[in-house]
Amino acid sequence: MTVIGLAQSNIIKSKSSVYREKTCCKNKANKFLAIALIFVIGLSVFFYLFQVNNISTKDYKIREIKKQASEIENRNKILQVSVSSLKSINGLQIKTQDFDMVAAQEIEYVNLSAVNGVAIK
Image 1 (tube, rainbow, N blue to C red):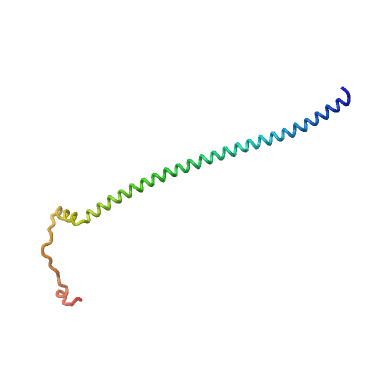
Image 2: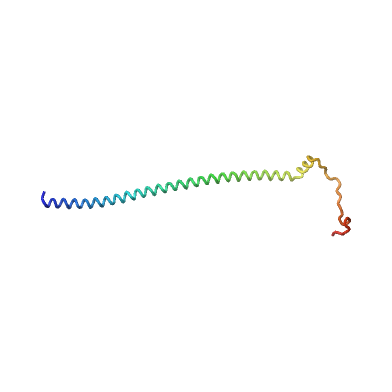
């Protein structure tokens, strides 16, 4: 090889080493961006699944509370019917017969003005 050939081969080698360094830096940056993107996507998927699970759990609790509320409303209606039947005249008459009570025949009223000697207006 001649001196010119050696000089040219050194120039080519030096240019290719600079090119390799630039592509190496670009490859590192691309790898970093790819890893960061994968991490962000994975984190997003995790938070999405967390939110879906949280919403479904709350939906289940809401359905359970609504079911309890409807059961309480039904029980309340039954109790209202029971109270109204116990307050009815027929119910009271049956209870008086159970306790061997006698219906009032003659009602006498007391005149308080005649008892105390004071006129009540």
